[in-house]
Image (cartoon, rainbow, N blue to C red; front, top):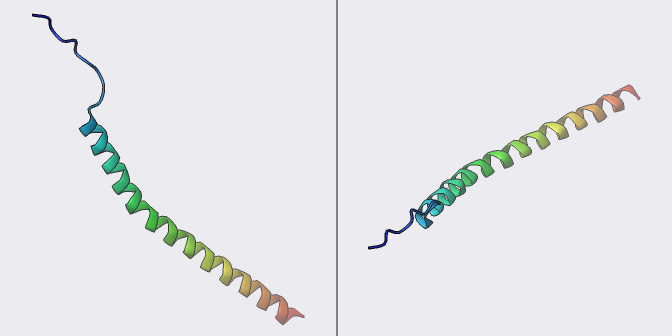
Length: 59
């Protein structure tokens, strides 16, 4: 009887599990990143308004 060679590599199930884990991590990270950018935009707008008001008061 001929023995089958031991194949090295990942099975389809292992690859699907890894892709599932990566997808879950991305779905968790995206809302946090977008929330951070909106906070940065708000702070930038407030700083710009403050600067314009300061220049207006000096004039």
